[in-house]
Length: 226
Image (cartoon, rainbow, N blue to C red):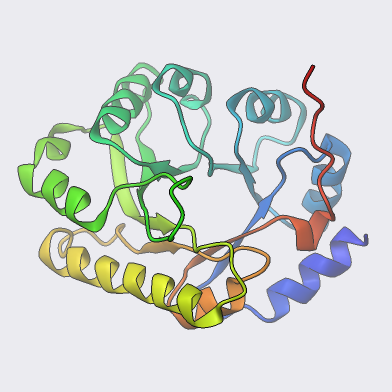
């Protein structure tokens, strides 16, 4: 796998408004360094412990994006350095991020994760849950987080029309809350959707952040559990 070549190939097809998050979970530091040397700066991780270990070993101008399910008791470990949390799926989590960001004297950018897939295993607000959370307004008191957009994961399926419909629904929802809630917030502009198998559809449907791992780094070597 020629990481530099794959990065160049993917970036060459991206519209100007779309950024690439290289998903580096379960891939070794050496491969991330190779991607960094090829000019990549945005990397996505799913596990807090793995992300903190890599942060300690790699260049400090990397933008680390947390893209996995985040437990409230783990927020404190990434709060000092994380660049964007894609996976805020509850007000409780948002409050904890705010608390830890305040301790770290930072404002942490966050995306609201919306459940758009036809799979129960995915996390995220439903559209109505998110509308209600935004309507109640408690989030407005959280001064150390900045809501910057939405994130969603399409169903893992070969049904292109279904995936397109799911991405389209997320873009529609983004437009709705951008107009009704965040119209005076220029930072609210990100739509994180699309992975290795479906990112071209996501881009057509309005994605601004695509999360690609396998196409860049090859198949992951998953850790063995005893």
